[in-house]
Length: 253
Image (cartoon, rainbow, N blue to C red; front, top):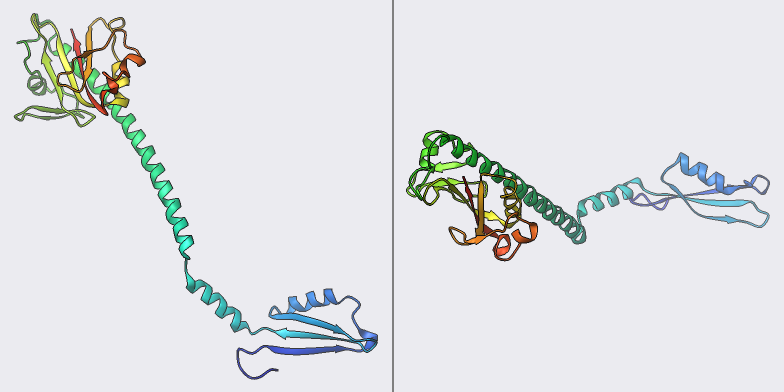
């Protein structure tokens, strides 16, 4: 015993006579370690014909506990924190990117549905009439009174009148020029990604009630899209590619 200090190690000296020295000290050491977890064989000295001596050091259990407590109290290192923050940032950016793509896709789908509904509701409301009313007249108040506007489009009587679309832009519905047998639907703030999808929705070869489509940044837009519409034609710098958000104008019979 090296002392009575509670942090001191305890040394045990085991001796064996020459005629009883274990032939295999390694299994013996393993057996001792199993019985006493805090015993570590520091070294083995074997005499010349006088037997063998094994020195065992009993490590103080409190020393191990103190080391473990210090390690736990240390917390995370700066490198570990930076690694966690970096991984978190990558996951957040990936999530935001995926969310943006999903949101844009949902908005485009809603915009298609809104356009189709408005077209059908106008044609149904004026079915049997000789025309759609006075040239350039705003048709939204009438459609709102008849409860024919899509439920996911917010209508405001104003002034000015506003019909909010899936892209958070205003939607205009007006009577065409004389002889007022056509009507116009203009959707503003359409993202370029949704512009291509909406631009291919109607064509003069597939829809007999479709007249024309114009795209641009002006209101009303002035760039006519050749029929039938193509991806290349819609993606042109004067059409869907003119800006991040464009205005689209359809004319129907």
